[in-house]
Length: 203
Image 1 (spheres, rainbow, N blue to C red):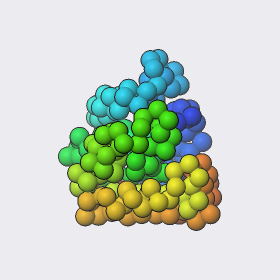
Image 2 (cartoon, one colour):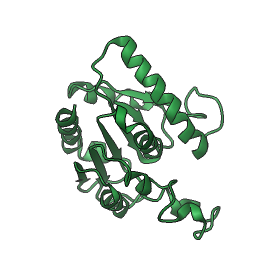
Image 3 (cartoon, rainbow, N blue to C red):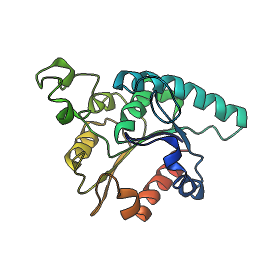
Image 4 (cartoon, helix red, strand yellow):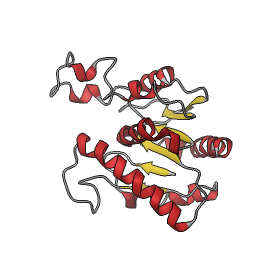
């Protein structure tokens, strides 16, 4: 599984959770973007989206070199959903499924309102910049995980993503009593059970 992490996180932050993925039979590959961790460059949305294509290319190469089972899934958390959906949008013939967690349907529009006017074309309901619009063209099985009381990316955005997804096989898992940054802890059993069943079903 190629995993794109959230803002304010780096690869090393996943040392504690990676074993949980291994326990359910998943090899986890977490990558940093420009400006994150030991990566140089500027941490911009544009760079992060561009990075996703090169990261996916190298991910495939590494898996092939190690001779691992070639069943590829892409997962993105919060900000990481942007590059994850970008990869699924352009390379869906090379993956078995997409998982997005705590993901914005409208790419954090409420945070950028002071920089980009709300009537700008980039926020249009048909703008391919938006996660929800790209999901309309992704047919691969899709799992959406969201916290019930997410104060950063409201649950309504997760539901909006689900409603915009055109995947025949799609599922929305809501973690009760959880917030944006603790749903993996608050709902650990439900969280990893959903991921395990999804990966086993579509591998």
